[in-house]
Length: 194
Ligand SMILES: Nc1ncnc2c1ncn2[C@@H]1O[C@H](COP(=O)(O)OP(=O)(O)OP(=O)(O)O)[C@@H](O)[C@H]1O
Image (cartoon, rainbow, N blue to C red; front, side, top):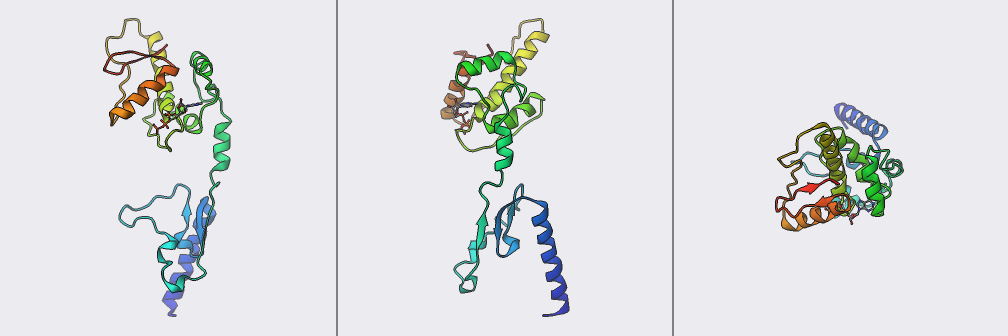
């Protein structure tokens, strides 16, 4: 092996061992260049590099990878401990929620509600059925309740607009706020805070 190659290999290994120390691994492989870390981003041109991609080759015998499925568990546990009050939801809304049997925010709600309440533009992505709808509807209701106290005149315009990509989703969004507010029959999907 040439000297240049040795140097390259050394710095290459050092680079990957530094990555291991810095970030929480999600998948570790025999060859660290195939490791995946929490928060890692991928080039849309290169795609996701997988150790198993070369497993049809006989030389891959003995290769392996390990998945750390509970890598985020610690953070999730802390998030789950939070109450609606902890994430900044007003007592009136908490009362309505608990009347419907919703006593604790889901993890995605605990993460996103504080940001939306603070007025940040927020993109929320999570697996289906984990409570994304209320994650944005609750802060919307709260903002509306706050605005109403500070504005004297009656509003004569929509206070929130929800755009859905399909009729099916539209129906789901319409059903959910029934828990926390009154849904008007207006085809413009206007939600009235309680
Ligand atoms: N904090 C909570 N406590 C208990 N149940 C909840 C809570 N938040 C939402 N739910 C219920 O969980 C179910 C799924 O919620 P929701 O439809 O909002 O999920 P979603 O993430 O928006 O799903 P999708 O990606 O399919 O739109 C609903 O029945 C909803 O009423």
